[in-house]
Image (cartoon, rainbow, N blue to C red; front, side, top):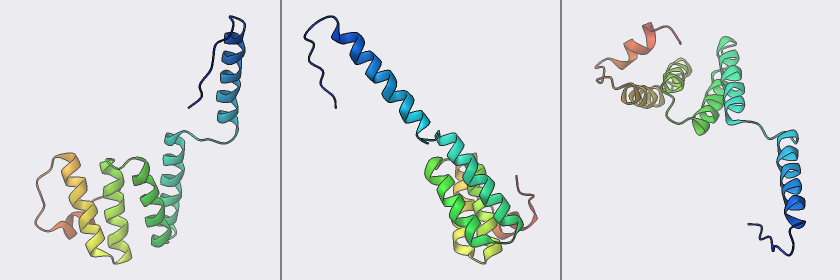
Length: 120
């Protein structure tokens, strides 16, 4: 926390100018918006799925979920990816979270839902 002691009226414009420069430098120094980071990880995950690199896709989807843990569509994509990677326990976990977030009742045969539903 920065404490600014106000000694005169002329110091306020200096403080404001410094604050504006600090904000501008933060934006130009590579700090990305969460939405941009999320989309980057999602794009990399989808490309990895196309290459059948499910380990890379799963790692990128984990990063997506760190940014947006309540994104039902990412949980569904993570469930399908885990199933394709052979990690059925993780697939079921993500599918249950997807169903919870969407307000859907649990499916008895969750593996069938993962197998026959088209990826969003």
